[in-house]
Length: 303
Length: 145
Ligand SMILES: C[S@@+](CC[C@H](N)C(=O)[O-])C[C@H]1O[C@@H](n2cnc3c(N)ncnc32)[C@H](O)[C@@H]1O
Image (tube, rainbow over the protein chains, first blue to last red):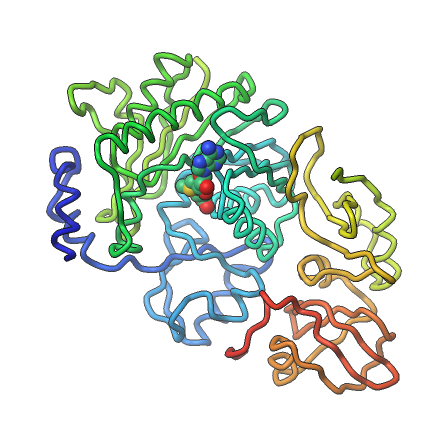
């Protein structure tokens, strides 16, 4: 059944470098990564406590992010330290869009599709609970998890709204906007291969259209020298480079080149006859680079 | 329903727990219905707010502090704090009631184990009972410290 499911990804053989290695990695379960919540505990203290309990972890250079190599529990959330909000289970790839956003204390930030809050809570941590984050999502159920995570991690600078990111008014302009758009989720395959759905051509194009609407609405809320980070956890160029291209051609956006400490590759140059001029400035994280999920990121600003 | 700003709730935390005023001044307090929320962000008019910072208090016959907010500011509390040993910590996290004699006033208390603020308890002074008010989502049945 697994082999069968992997065939789905053949459509990307031409655009994913080192494709056979990529496929091999998809066959292996994704390790758990976590982020130390430095709002509540010192990193060294938490790691010492977890190691005393029998965890073996490996720090990712320069970040408060750890890969779990061994643990004394079935689920990494089954500890007192987790319940106290000292850490958050989050894939390294999902931290990348926040690093690209580079939030600063005091800023006004909009997270348009925020639940369950992995990125919003990380943004709050980097802002040291100052400034303001509007964390939005359309789904009531997912907002419940978002609220629970905010509470557990002790985040106090977030306002949660329940609006449609395609056209809602978020009342005012923002210094930075994260659009972590709903997507076909191909990059999460390793987390749950059994439940993986993906999308067909029509599915990708419906999602692409919706993502473009959200990007258009993001621009409407962006301050003059602000930035938008557009991200998805999928590989389809229709949901990624094509959306960015739309932003450049129709919304007066430009793509900024950024440094990112997490290993990545550049974007896709051409897909299905469509050329993407700005591909070199786009960022793609693949599972076979550092044993994570997959992610696409582009940083956009007004031209 | 609207959130209405009312920063006088700071006084509750100052008087009940001796938390320094400057710690509480980082938050504005907002009432909606029976709940009071604490928010450390800057403000501007925004519509359709579902969650505003973190729940800090519930209004009833008296004011009941939330475990979530005490887990943030409780480490600054200078009175009405009860420190537990490891065994009692586990019982408290399971939601059990404890029999302990402790120099704290009756009423709501900050419950700790070493550096950890475990959450909110209710101390019945006369009967030397500590009731765990940890919400069920934070309770842990099978765990160790
Ligand atoms: C990729 S997930 C977001 C993950 C989140 N940023 C995190 O890091 O935890 C996409 C989210 O978009 C939300 N969503 C879908 N359609 C939406 C819409 N029209 N407006 C706002 N949110 C929407 C979904 O409910 C889902 O929670």
